[in-house]
Every structure is written in C-alpha cells, then in structure tokens.
Image 1: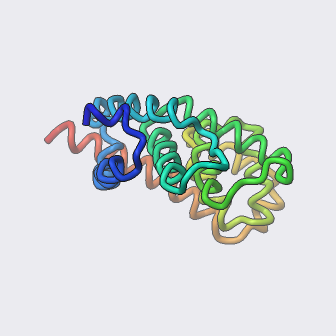
Image 2: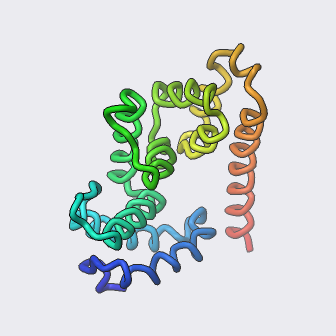
Length: 192
C-alpha cells in the first residue's frame, strides 16, 4: 500500500478501490478513522498529481482513476475535495449553461458538493427539487449537517413542500434512520 502514493495507473489502483467498497460499511465507526486518514493522505497526493480537472488529451483510464480518487477522497473526509465539489455545485446552480456538468461528474458534484452546503445552497437545491424532485432529494440527503437540512426543508416554501409528493417524507425518514442507526451501532460496538 505504501507505493500507491506515487502510482497513477488505474490498473494498480483498481484492487484498492475494490477494498474501499468492501470496507465502506465500516466507515461510520470511529475505529476506521486511522484508515480513512491514511487513505485520504494517499489520495490527496494522487489528486495533487492528477488534479481535479480533466484534460482533453487524457486517456480514459486516467479519467476513471480521477473519478474514483475524488469520490473516495470526499468519502474519507478530505475537506479540499468536498470544497471543490461544493464550489463546482455552486457554480453549476448559478449558471448551468456556462458550468455544465458532464454526466459522469453529476452525482459526485451534487452529492459531495452538498456535504459542505450552507443554507443558501440548500435552498437552491430545495427549489430545484420542486421541478426535478426525485433526483435532487437524493442529493439533499448527502448534506453533512442533518439539522441544517431538516431546518431548510421544514422552513422552505410551505405551499410547495405540502404539494411535494413522496420524496420529502422519505428524505426525513432517511435522516432520522441514518442518525438512529449510526448512534445505535456506535453504542453497540463500544460496549461489546
């Protein structure tokens, strides 16, 4: 694993990304923090070499490597990754024509960008959800600040919220369920 920090070949990274997927269920637990810090550091070095922006002359394997690296860097809590996603999301929401998202970057930009969302960005997502609610509610559930998300959703345009169909209650259920399961799991594993 120590050689990965200087490796920029997707084939070399592929097994590690598979391990990340397998271990992702354990990332909620405090015991995974050292692993997250180590892998975050390695991914930060990789992204420094690759950069966050695609170049037109890159091969597909390099593009795939970047997509996986930024995805996992954000999951491992890299603040720079989350801030870049947040900036890209903000730019896109302000001017979707000028800052068009490639389909392969859409989910990362919306979900990881929402991780550091402030109230104004959340309000933009909520407003967007009134026209395209099924997808946008998925991204609102990525918000790292559950209390802020709950506040914005409950206090935004009551007439639209009431006319909104199924996703609103499901989002709120997801927030409470995730919070409950996380607290119960942490309590269980610290006492057993």
